[in-house]
Image (cartoon, rainbow over all chains, first blue to last red; front, side, top):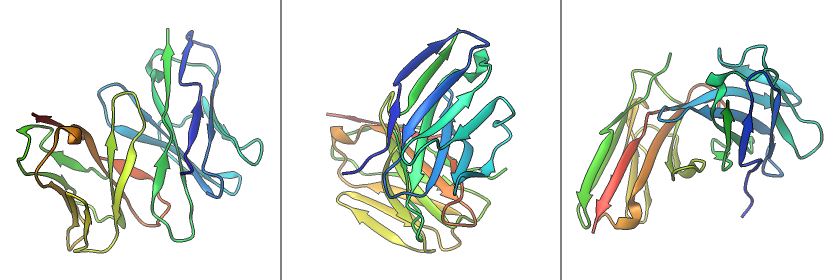
Length: 114
Length: 112
């Protein structure tokens, strides 16, 4: 069964460094999302992306964050200058569109900022 | 802010018992999805409900969407130890591709 994949599974970085989290959505899906989950808290929406542009973003998604679909398969989240509070699980999700409601999530990347 | 309140937050039961998890909001959602999440992994989709009053069954799991599309419930019949995990509800407003707002989750523990 097709699934969303994410790399790396765990990323450790120092405060102020840039990180890029990578996702490969399900191949025929057209709508892509990033969510994050700080340990012990709710899953929170960051950004949605369609047709090579941001569709919606939350207040968390400030100028330090950016997303890109560099080719036909990858979808990336970049954090330019990481802060301690960026430590969280980051989940990518994709949706078929075409009237579908189901968002399918990847296994996540655990980001630890030291 | 659209909030989804899940209750109970923790549920500890014996194998064979029935249970219900609730997901409530003051907002109307166009769809509501239930996920199960294992520690350190991503949410896995169980079901999506779209129509007010809709009931969906997945083996021993029954999902219901409220008539006003503001609330939902998950009922498990004859719980098994394999049902142990974190159950999340998540709602989308407006379009079918809108962002999901998640509840805080219900941690279910089924004892043998």
